[in-house]
Every structure is written in structure tokens, then in C-alpha cells.
Image 1 (cartoon, rainbow, N blue to C red):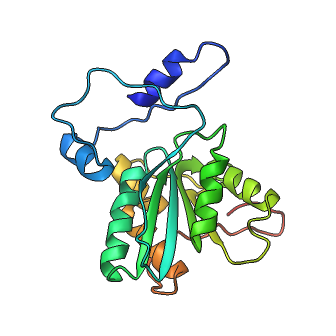
Image 2 (tube, rainbow, N blue to C red; image 1 turned 60 degrees about the vertical axis):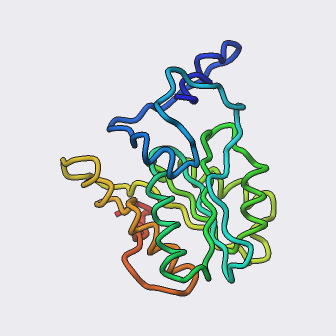
Length: 211
């Protein structure tokens, strides 16, 4: 709703908003996941600063390892669920920050630098294809030198470059490896605490074609 209002108020340059299919989270989950205190769904949205993301929840300062999830679009709620699961499974030894990018362009470079500086692992999650938001973030991190010392592990989680069987959205998210358990498994693997079912990398043949 807030993003719709933001685009509505932009009248001096082109803008685009991806409005996904599916159902809303509902009032209870909105309050729980995002810290709202709503008695009912607002009748209208409020414009947000263009190009600025937001931190939904922060890793505890006492965590031994810190992971950041930077989500764009519909995978924000599963990211929060995965973050809670990891913190519970590790008794708080792994702390997870979840951030909502909100915008693909312009990137919130200040937020990305903050996440890169304060965490050992950064995972981008999107309902998009290879070459999208995650690659945009990786390109920025590479050019800014954040990957030079090898201390930051970065993983983009995207829709794999393949044909999907017809099915419900949840079934296709499962096939794509973009559900909360896959995000959780990726965090545990990157922190050296698990080898569960993570999203597999695409295989590239000798001609450079993704298989």
C-alpha cells in the first residue's frame, strides 16, 4: 500500500511498481512480522523515501555470528520466518538481521554497506531471475571493495533459470527453493552449522549455457 502511494506521488520521472499476485498476510502477521500496532488495515498508504530500504529486525549484539538477509518483494515474510527459525535452532548464537530493500533502483547503497560491515554473511532474496536485484547488489559490493578481503560471504537466492511446472504459487516457490526452509538452510550452511537443502547453483556447460 505504501509503495503504491509512493509511485502515485512520483510525477517528475518514470517509475514502475511490481504488484504481485496472491493474497495478503493479514493483520495478525503484519503486526507480528513488521512490528506494527494496527487495529485494522489502513484505508490509504503513506509514501516512503524513494531509494530507501528499511531494517525489519536486527541481529542481537551478543550473537557469535551475524547474518543479514536483504529481501526484495514477496519473499520478505519467509525471510523473517527463516531468521526466527535459525536464531531458535542455534540458541541465539547466530543472529539474523532482515532488511526490506523496497527498491531495486535506485539501490539503497547506505543500507547495503551497513549490512556488509556488520555481518559475516549477506543473502539477497528475490522473486526474480538471474541478473536481477541480487546481481545489482553484488556489482555494487565488488566495485566498492567490500569483497576484497574475503571476509563477507554473499549468496543471491533467485528464481532458477528453468521451466516450472504449473502449480500454485507456494508449490512454485518450493520448486524454486525460495521458501523459508531453503532460506534457513542457506544461512545454516554459510555459518558452518548445517548442510541442509539449499538452493542449488545452476550448472553451466562448455558453451556458457545454463542447464
